[in-house]
Image (cartoon, rainbow, N blue to C red):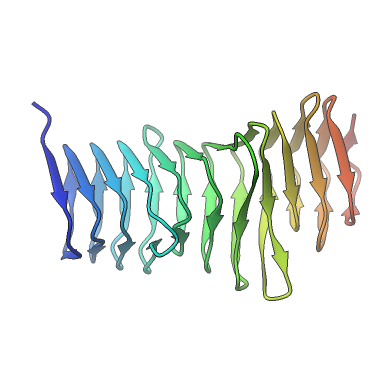
Length: 231
């Protein structure tokens, strides 16, 4: 039978190897390398210097008073899944080799998310931001990044800080609008019919090997380009 352990108070542990189900609402701090092979339902914060490897499923539903922080790194294995909703802050580095599904905005604080797997930003309606109030945050895509749903996804840029989106893989806008404020790109962008991609805000560099294609609409508010492919 499947066993579910529930932690409702803030807990500090040395390390964790999870083969079953764990529900954390009070916060979890780990100091050494840990692994999730089952299902971790996280509605509180994750902190500490310990790296976390996810080969199972991490469901992160925490609100804006919570965060995934600390000097440790979270890695989503090729067989792993991270499902995030809510406005909890990503404040530690995260490497994705599996599948990330984001159905909300995502505040970031001095964090870098490297996507080598599949990143689905699914927004059914409204406008949602990947934002920061300080410099140093970025999403680096050398895998597959997909914006779906009729809502708008916005990478914000303010004088106090910007979230860069750097694409060396494939970025597809399947629905709605995607706003990118700053980035350096040598990968492919595809804009499907009735969808919109906006390069706006601070600066963009489209380098050799970059391409933009599709029946959707591209809006460019600024940037520099080297020879690439536009169709």
